Length: 210
Image (cartoon, rainbow, N blue to C red):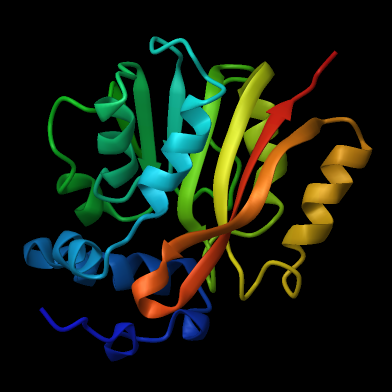
């Protein structure tokens, strides 16, 4: 099957508001199109990220947040590796409606660029794949992820390589490390969406609160 052109959709860097991003994904979710496109485009980000996390997070009963969970692709990858206590949060109600049953303990519709209604030190790990990209989550979100993650817990994520330095992500990762809020375990350029020549930095950092 010929690969589809991601450029047929509205370019992500033209999305300037939360409402635009929400409408973009609500439309993409319609009729299962989002999942079909991800399969056609060989979207490897979820499996790559979960594979890295599983090397560090051994307890399959760990409490995990799939941040910007979309239609549940990361949740499915976590479930395949035996994790059974997964929470999900996403901006798009229609993508959440497309999540298969039996993966998540709870799903929350939320704008993750704002403080989230979740307690401090609740999760053993936060996973965020695909949302640190043009027009989506900002670098400041990492501070909130640290807040809701337990001491010695993990934050595993992808950052679109096109915005990594330009939009402050590289600086924010280093700032949190300088302030001893986390320490780097993994950070490398992953395949992510190689069929579209879209690559992402894949990172895993361990939270430090002592």
